[in-house]
Image (cartoon, rainbow, N blue to C red; front, side, top):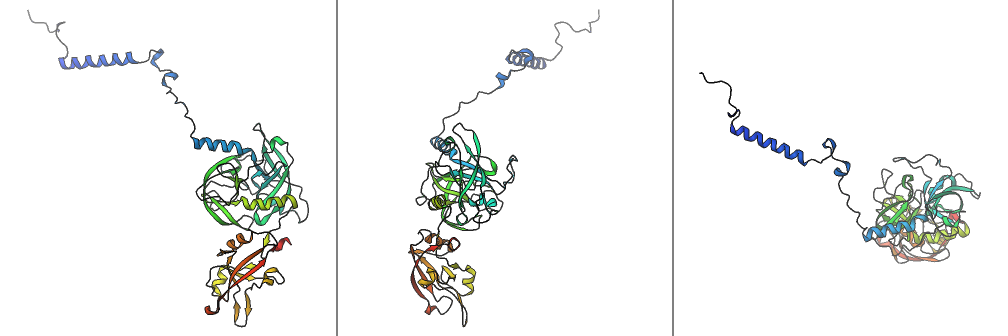
Length: 406
């Protein structure tokens, strides 16, 4: 008979190599299937796919110190809103903060609050001089339980030229936590500083940095020059005005007042009024409602005027000296018209032995005194003419109260 064309049960249907590969594949599938979690449908549980959470590490000593400083000082910092500002609208990220929404801090246990003049400048500019403005701001304080409460604030006194104002709130004692005050004459470039305030309306915000410069002359938003300013890279933004600049011990060393920026937001260059100046101004505002600031009551010429007149010495050219004043009595000469044209006045180059280059240098030297004390000036006389005729003259001038305060 003819051989059957049907394959025998013992005859292989695949080559040996393909059969071995197929066997290995089946074994791998079986192995993978057995390795899956034994759950319904083969889907892993949430607990099985959630990675373990690493335990939180202890704060470093630096972090612990910063946290302790904030917790210790934050209740001394308040939110100040000028009553002319509509403050009912909730602040949102990116919102523009109007002038009049700023920061302050509790000065003493009597409820005096210090802030910048420009924070409440809107209401102050609307009140006729000599009239009691009544309520000028709303001040929000934090109680011992962490809850905040807003109180009306009345004006105690303000000094525009120093961008400082003192308010009074009648709040329960549990809301009154006076700030610790330090000194600014010992502040060093490079030391750590901390700012607490309400930037963009976000209350009790802490920013940190270092002192990046000292002895700066600040042109405040009120338009005046403030000498001895502290420069810092701690972020200071709109809403921080009037808030405290603190040292590492939580002591007040300055009052945040201005930023150098082209955008309106922090660019890493902020300025604070030194606390030593604040210590001289605030007690007078509390006691008298005003401040007697020492002054020469002379007018300094623009630096460009000196160049036009041929002044070569670095210093402050005197433009005007009021007749009958102490400076005139001491012999200080102003810029004046002579037979041959304009004659340059005295150029102040030193004050109390300290070099004077800018008007800010002169202001700093004068404000180290009280009204009635004297300042010793070294001036160069005869600038702009024959250099051989220039002479140095020393003058002792009794300081008066600033002219606008007389």
